[in-house]
Length: 321
Length: 252
Image (cartoon, rainbow over all chains, first blue to last red; front, side):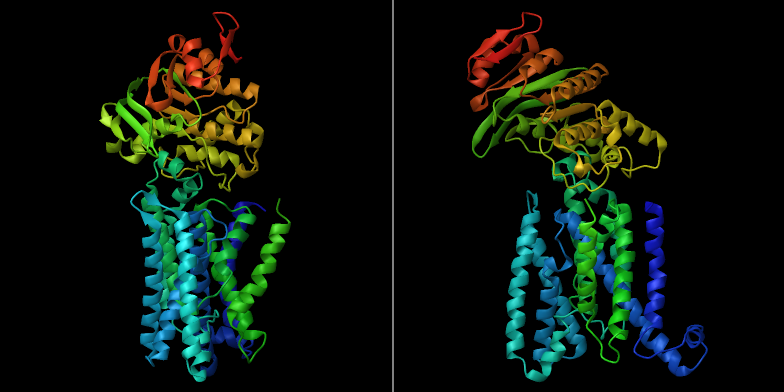
């Protein structure tokens, strides 16, 4: 397919996926009533479901998926490693350890989020501090520090789960499984998405040049250390915003950039915005499926993304040279 | 134009280059010769401002190389590195167009003139038929020629090349040496690390010989590429053949 047509198709998927996410849910609302509710008329219960529940949820899912896909694309370019994934930074482990600690000491919901944020920020800052040296940046140190921190946080989380009373364990699982059921306020994530996407876009061509190696990029006039630090900062911000909204939703961050590359989108000027569009649309659709298919029970959306993401990636891999 | 002032380079406690003073000027074509590990790559990296020397400095137009803004430096000095990861996902034409980055805010262009220039360079390195092929699927020799085309696209005043002939067959070795000689004749300064004294004798006008323990000799190619110098350099016996006009040294 022509690249321009593909780009338009992916961009059109954004309103389409949001429409599907608003339309579908555990309660069936016919199209006419849905349109009436969307335009501010119709029955008040419909308006409440559409504007009070589904629209914020659809937007939250979109923002979360877009943030994860953006972070994945940035980290894969930064580390020049196709297996890089937003959770490599230890951010999800840090957030989970922070939130679980807050739950265990009986903190309020707001305090739980503050603890989660502190844990995530601590993890990202630690990985950054271990990776950067006066002589420069080292991708292996990022990966090793991230893996080590994730393992450490995993142990802390297991310890907290072992110590927690049985009644609290279900609430704690939110941080371990990706789940958007508590995502009622998408505004902070949408703002973080706006900032991260704009800053990342300013680094797009430099990220292409980083694929040639640091020395070559520097010899072509790229301020390598600055680009790497900005990219890391953007990826960490995007991952933190996504994790605080939806926990550890897997596969979107790893798979979306690969899906796009396998469809022929490689330069970061196109890859970054299309990752945002495709990752957001994929998660909005996955969340609509998680909410609708087994209604009235709700599946954690992380299960849907894994069940769809893995075969999609394998299919594309199989038909690529 | 590009000069080393009392330049010394050490790596892992070993002195590779000691107290080197050479000046690369427009129109000159230099060969850097030496055994494996003698410091050819380290010298090129230091001259490109990518590694700090252990002593002395590198100056471009009389100004220390560290004092140049990165982008302005990239418009004046280009380097072909010995190794480069093959991680680039795009096609060969886009890969070559990345060489425009120092002169254009975005490296790619819808600008037909830039595309035309890149296509002409692909033609020059015999890759015109591979423009739309993904860079990472090229063979080793094709990739090497694409990297040369990218360096030509950058079109710096000083072109430093670390083993430009690696992976190339004989015909393409000669094509590339001629392309480099054309650039020198056109007023660019060219300096390349080579393992082929015969190629150096044919197409370069000056040579730097890097001996063990940091000793460096440099001067006109005819004075440098003598049997004695090369036997001491490569530490093996050589037999001169081919007569005085086209001298070839064969290991004995």
